[in-house]
Every structure is written in structure tokens, then in C-alpha cells.
Amino acid sequence: MSVSIIFLGSCTLDKVWMVNNLPQGGFKSKAYKYFEVGGGMAANAAAAAACLGANTHFWGRAGNDAIGKTIKQELEIYNINCQYFKLIDGEQSPVSAVIVDDNGERMIISHSGTQLSQTPAWLPLYKVQDMQAVQVDSRWAEGAKTLLEHARILGIPTVLDAEKTPVDIFDQLLPYTDYVIFSETGLINFAKDKYNIDLVKHLSSGQENEYDILLQILKTYSCKITAVTKGSKGIFWVDESYTKNYQSSFKVKVADTTGAGDAFHGAFTYAIANNHTTKKAMEFASAAAALKCMHIGGKGVPDLLSVEEFIKSRQENIIEE
Image 1 (cartoon, rainbow, N blue to C red):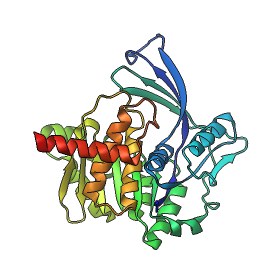
Image 2 (cartoon, one colour):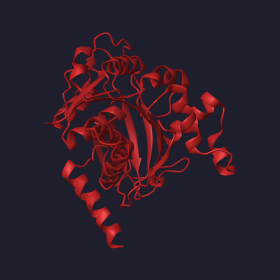
Image 3 (cartoon, rainbow, N blue to C red):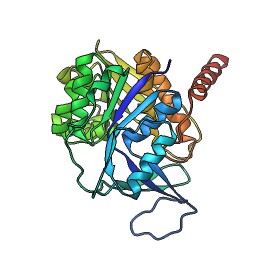
């Protein structure tokens, strides 16, 4: 029986240009490939979980325009339940320009669309009781807080994709979050805004490290797990026993890193919904993100068998060595 998960938050349409090198300063060049694909943190994470076999629901908002309809249609291709993906008349949907170079690195310029209604009053919270986990990002704070609060009351695991966000929004969401996973930029900004700590400077001088900040966050908000993803440098996290943990990243030939973090979050939430330990969930999510990086586009995510076989092959290589 597949697990059921709600993903609430951002969605966008990515307009992707493939180039040999990322632009520096004023720049005019030709792309050798162009395509459009749905994106956004929660939407991409939902697609990752759906590909892994979860019964996935996306709750979010966009304009009732051509872009919004395209985003919804693509999510439905992944068999994601979009009954509560609300398209609002007269509003403009989010869109992003994504430039990807030959090394898989990317530059993103996003437009959040017009100001969408913030009220979460229409969310069908009675459906939360049937879920095994929920995941949110901070782009719709009112909706995220409402879902996290309700899931917490029901004892359902809650996961927060913690990108760069104003600290007052984190203050609203973190008290109801079991598993908070920061991006590197997100953690750097939060450390500065919340604790007045220049994490970049402290890391270079050896005064403080990621674990110190993660432990401080865990104690402040009583989360179960506080973590930071650092791309090729791996994942660092602290648990309720204040233990420092680390998961190395899997080395692969990178085609495009767009959406790798989203794939990680979707796979992590899928693993937690399936009652995996945190350590196993981190390994599983790292493998899913690595496999995603081997494909172009934010939704180039693997299925369950591919992830399991990938992990097994890497473990066998370690044994052989």
C-alpha cells in the first residue's frame, strides 16, 4: 500500500536555456537548447515523491492563465492529485528563467507573479488525517502554518523545505516542524537574521560550524531534526539527542542541478512517510537527488527501483574496495 503525502507551497513554470557557459556581467549569446517545464520547490518535491510511488497531493495557488494551466496539467501527468491546486482568475502565475551550463550549474531569475490570495480558509484540512506525512515550503506562509499546525495536532510528521526566508516567517513555521532541512543559503541567512552570526566568516575562521547553528535552532524550536544540504559537500544534521550526523553526497556525472534540492526533499519526506530512520531517509534522499542531477530539467526524478539499485550498487562498490 502506497503512502499518502501532501505537498503545499510554490509552483512555477521554468523556461530553460542550455548554454556552454553561464553569463558574466553584460552578455549576449545563443542557447543550444530551450524547453519549458514545471518547477517550484513544493511542486518538484511532489513530483519526486509521486515517481517514487507515493499517493501525492499538491496544495497551492497560481493564476488562472496559460502558465497556471500548464503547471497543473504537468503535475497531473505525474498522477499528482491537484484537486486543491487553486487557479485564481485575474492573477498572473509564477515563471522562472533558468540558464544551465555544460557543467550542470545554473542561474535562475524568477518572477513570483501577481499577489495571490494568502487566505488558507479553503484548505480541506479534514484530509490531513489520511496522510502519512506533509511537506511545506515558506512561499505561502499562511497556508504552510495552517497545514503544519493541523498535522502536528494529529501526530503526522511535518517537513519544512527551508530556503532563504524572512526570519519572522520561520518563527511562525518552525514550532510546528519535525524535520527542517535548510539549503546552505537558507541557513546562512537565518543564522545572520536570527542569531546575528556571520556563518560564512565563522566557518572560515573555525569559530563556529554548521552543527553549532543547527543545534541552536533545534533547541530554540524543539524540532526533531535540523539539517542543511550543501550540494556536493553532503548533508549535515543534528537530532533530538544532540548528536551530530553526516551523509556524504553520491558522486555522479552532473547534467543539471536544477531541482536537485527539491528531489531530495520529496524523497526524504517519502522515506519518513514509510517509517524509515532519519539516517536511512538521508541516504535515500541523497541517492534520489544524485540521480536527478544526471538528467536535465527540474523534474528529472527517478523511480523507487532506480534509487534502491543505485544505493545497492554504491554499497557493493564500497565492500569490494
